[in-house]
Length: 303
Image 1 (cartoon, rainbow, N blue to C red):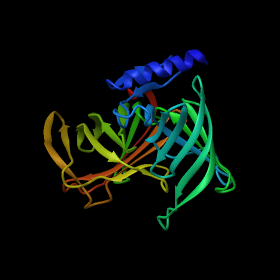
Image 2 (cartoon, rainbow, N blue to C red):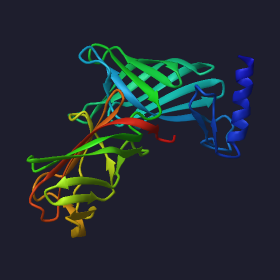
Image 3 (tube, rainbow, N blue to C red):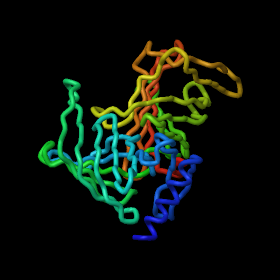
């Protein structure tokens, strides 16, 4: 315990002069050490750690439901006291007085939870416990007992590979194997999806090459159980090339549009990766295209 206190004191002294990104052991998340809120007041509250993670929530009515990325845990110290603050755009804000033993956190406090219909908030008694890589917040008086489990890192962030199954107008089906789609998580919990260039061979228009593009700032949608966005805004384009019998018949950029159908992206997490459903139409082409992929994670997003 004395050794731990010495390390904390050392971190505070470094925090007054610089912002430092370090990494704990192989089992610990990286530590962000920032300057004190008021460097002229040594007794003011100082931030020790700031972590971003994803949530799973269990209540009396549902179990281990995924609730998106971007939930933030911050640990502060003021004098000899430690506090932990939690924030998530959906579930709200918690503040806890805690004890820390190595990377284990325990404490009690309150949780301010928004009403999704009225926009008002209500405060509940809550407890917090667990290692810094997986912290559980228990709120007994919400939905028969609610447990919000915060997991360090990202669940959907990374590169995923699978077969992209493409249906044109619901009448013609094609596929492209070993397609790698990349998801990055933004600080606000939204995600970006990058679809690579891929080729569909033997279609009625010949061999088709669909170019790479990135859909940005896709928010988590609780009702749809994944990240969802209608992304046709008149600016995003797709390079489309068609070659039939050795002759190039199309080679141009086309704007994603909503003329034929709703152009949307839906990304859902699975146990091993993600499923991606991408429905779109381009330019004046008469048929909507639906591309679906169940992807297994190849690489995690760099934290």
